[in-house]
Image (cartoon, rainbow, N blue to C red; front, side, top):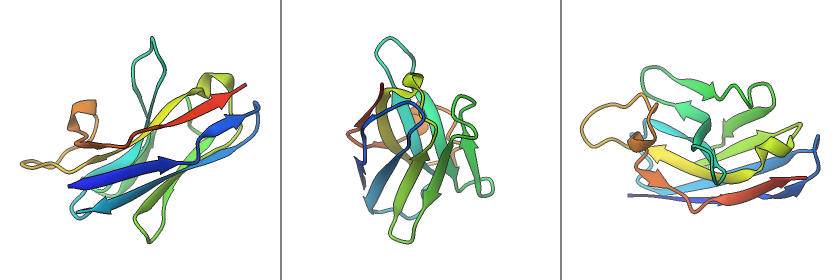
Length: 126
């Protein structure tokens, strides 16, 4: 199994920056994807940024954050989300999530593909 723990959430003024971190532990081998979602009550959960290790290594960003957010990963199985030029609409609960398929390689496009989820960290921009 994989354990994901988020940190770094908080309150920021519009235009400021926050940096989220997700510490992954356990069996982190053979992960297809590792990235960030966000959700606000009344809105659908949105895939914000993700590392895709299958089908060739790549990153994928939501249009709403492209150019402002950057996902990165260090050597300690920690993934980060650098959030610059924050906007009020970025306010949400942010979740770290990972895909480790049992049967098939996943393209990580569906929320259902993500097997593991962190508890979440709140980001408020106001």
